[in-house]
Length: 147
Image (cartoon, rainbow, N blue to C red):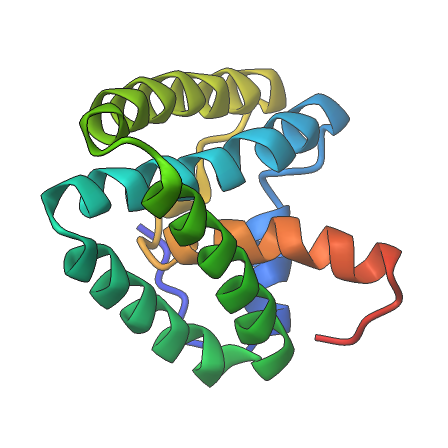
């Protein structure tokens, strides 16, 4: 298991990108990572909305340590996702979230099979939080925003 002691966002993204260079794997990640975040928030929301809010608060604390621009982008994304969950019928949130979570993770593993490299979080669980920043970083680069 490779430890990643650096907390520098650029170093973390560079390490993460090592196993995300295949264009098909990247495309799968650009779809599946946000969907996984949404479905995970949905599972937590189904437990109790405050549980989902606490998870968002914890992630935001970590993201603000890494990069304020990324944290603000993730906060906006989380806000939209939480608003969508709040608008859904409560009985539908958990089954929909579980189904999406499973399908999206299958997609992720298919992407890594295509890539020929294992997922980064196998070496460092922090990369479960870096994955969404990898996707957001692509958007930021397209919009010429600094992170």
